[in-house]
Figure 1 (cartoon, rainbow, N blue to C red):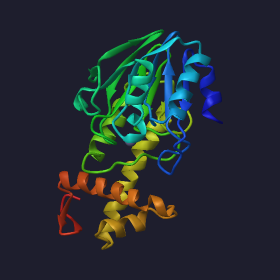
Figure 2 (figure 1 turned 45 degrees about the horizontal axis):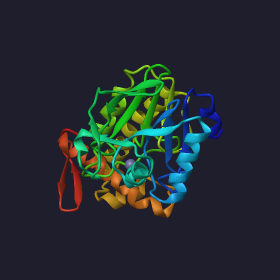
Figure 3 (figure 1 turned 30 degrees about the vertical axis):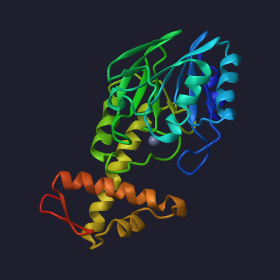
Figure 4 (figure 1 turned 90 degrees about the vertical axis):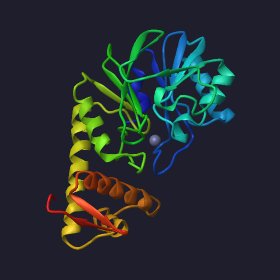
Amino acid sequence: MDSKRQTRSLQHIRHFTAANPGYLTLQGTNQYLLGREEITVIDVALPGAENIDGILEQVERMGGKRIEKILLTHIHRDHCGGALALKKRAGAKLGISNLRAGYLGGEDFTYASGDRIPYDGGELTVVHTPGHESSHCCFYQPRQEILFTGDHILGQGTTVIPPPDGDMESYIKSLEKLLELRIRLLLPGHGPAIHDPYGKIREYIEHRLMREQEVLESLRKGVHTIPSIAARIYTELAAPLVPFSQLSVEAHLVKLAKERRVVKEGERYFLTEKA
Ligand SMILES: [Zn+2]
């Protein structure tokens, strides 16, 4: 089912998908618009006129008068690349994680985990979810029990954990943290809405733990380098995704090394007695 149809019934929440489809961005980045007259936008992918016009037209369609503020889940290009352009065009206030204050230049405010950000028609709570990117935040809307997940959870497939900033240990902890929230719906940065939040979150945690076991199993079988481990456990992968599978293997190995379950020697990894 397409996510447009799924989110149509949501009160004062719409989205406009940027024209940046790809292997990692799926159909494109979902840029969310919240509010009655004063609209809050979560993530702006592209600075081009086509994207900015598209967002402004969506504001009009939902009965909005103007864009009040822009929030960013994280600082990867496909989520913040159009933020300054939209700010300039719409005269909106731009917010960013306190951990990335000044990153774009031109931010008007920062937010930290637990902060409540009011918008016209509701309130969002900032939930810091490091892992995919160390400043990554999800935004929780308690009234309708909705979580805007950015790249922490995607509508399809899994997200990339690119070391050194991407961190598998933090990522799994950030997923576990979400299980404490009352959530009815996940609205991801890419792909369709997710109506079984806890199922998805548990599936994500189990998937990573399964991959970790596969990495350990590879080492046991005498496969010791990142490319060879990735080739062994990520079968049936489209060629452009191979480098990203290697990043994920590296992220697992960094976690295992931190736990002293593996050691690195040159380009090769070996088990310790703790594994
Ligand atoms: Zn990202």
